[in-house]
Length: 256
Image (cartoon, helix red, strand yellow):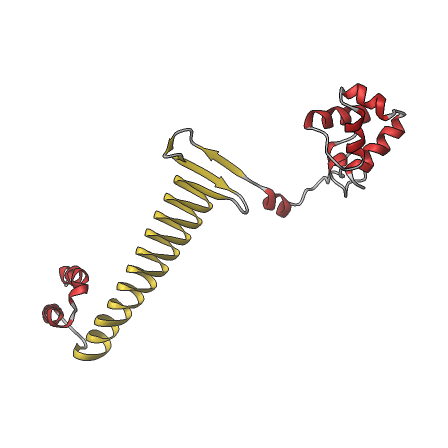
């Protein structure tokens, strides 16, 4: 039953004409007629007065599937899962920067936090923290940012169980410089390391490969290797690494 149908039914049960009801609510008879024909809806203050006049709930007036005047039955043990689906918390700082809140906390299904500092299931900001997070500094299960930390992380510098970045650190990582359990990159260090130019690890595969248990090299390889091999590998990088990767080469040489 629509809101208009319910209003007409309640008016007749209360014994009012449209003119009498209009006078009680200080509106025109045409307004009452439009409400009952579902051509328009009463304003909030008028709905409250109608509820008081007819002694019925707002749920009954506004929800077509509610047939009880007192509203839907209240369960003595409400569903916890249903509560979670509708739970929501939001807070914004009064201070803004360029119209963006300095801090925005917005937690709930389908909600996104947006601020300089953003916290939520989904978060976007300079510093973001969330299940799904994106920002310059990003922390989350799924994280994207200049510096990204998370179970699944992608960024300029990324660290996580699965990491993708120019500098990647994690269980499984892919990057220009990759350090992790399984590392793939131009320069790779890990339990299993696959490096285009340099690979160092238990199992190492690359143009220059330094392995503990196993290695395969296109130019120079040693298994097991020692400190003198690290120095030799560093010198060989000077002639194998292209100029555009000079920054990464210098970074790697710093630690060799």
